[in-house]
Amino acid sequence: MNPDNYLGKLGKDKITNFEGIIVAHITHLFGCATLGLAPQKTKDDGNLLSTQYFDIGRVEIIGSGITPEEVAAPDGKTGCDGREVPVTVR
Image (cartoon, rainbow, N blue to C red):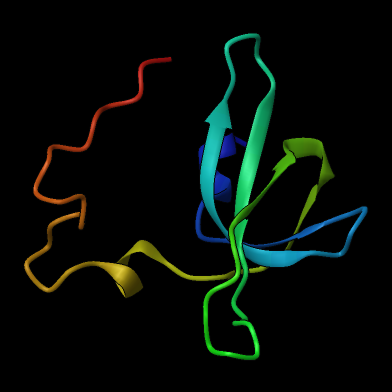
């Protein structure tokens, strides 16, 4: 699967069982790829838990998660503070 196709899916780390929506795909300088999982739960005091990053091979897709349309801004913009979203060069 193309790593970008993971974005928005519900994933689980195979080692720790940490679950969250995949919100980031990072390719490091020497080719290592990691995915950022944002948990759908909050702390007992209501504060957000931090996004955690795992090597791509440790993440199992366990659900459909959320679509880009479900989180799009009403004006159709990306929510990136009005900046243009860079195009990934492969």
